[in-house]
Image (cartoon, rainbow, N blue to C red; front, side, top):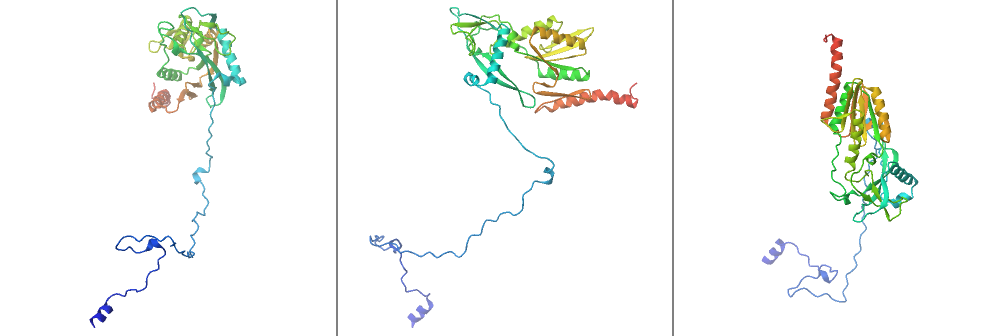
Length: 359
């Protein structure tokens, strides 16, 4: 009776033995794991095909269009790179660079840059190389191919090949001030460029150089430099000394604030000249004097008259309402404030006169 009640109250237990598919599913024994039989193999299990198939990915059906505010213009971008050569071997196969090197050698011969001599005993000549540069316009288009013969000045020794190297360069504040003065007084702004400027400087040191590639000078001979060559440590100083001496003969005097700013003031008017390496700005109210100055500089150096100032040191100038607005990438805000105050100062007397407040 008690056994029957116990069986009735206990949960039902299945007396069937579970189906074993392989030796790995044998129940563990008390003595340890049961070794697998060599002849036993897993029984194949039939896979039932799945009745449910994965749905296709949900893709957006509507057509993607740009916003309405972007439909009135087209935005595009294009990038291009100008490849500049780095070796003489590459330049020999290009007619444009061949002509550029020929022009450079002719310019060196015209200015009598060197004398072909034998190397004296105890002297060590410096080497040189060709540097190739593509000159571009303000809009990025190619203007011309320029090949420059550069001396390896890093091989010069102080006290033997050179001594002083400092050369003044116009300050950017001087450029801004000159443009502001010209705008306030309605003076014309002219721009000129000196071709091969450093070749005009005279050398006082005894410097010897190996013949350049592409020249007709034989190997045993060397070049004794008479003029400053690009790459020499004293070349900027020699060029500035030559230019300052030349313009002082025309009646200019250097400014005490900036040595690269020259001033000439006579009864006929005032002329201001600002030099930045080989670029210069000329302005003033003496128009005949400016014309004579251009002729004088053209006789002394090989000059290029660029006309009215348009593009100078990355600056682009526009003359609007008798004022010059110069804009440059990442220009400081304070410069714009100075220009706005300058315009207000120019227009304020006219407004006061119109209102009858100026007696």
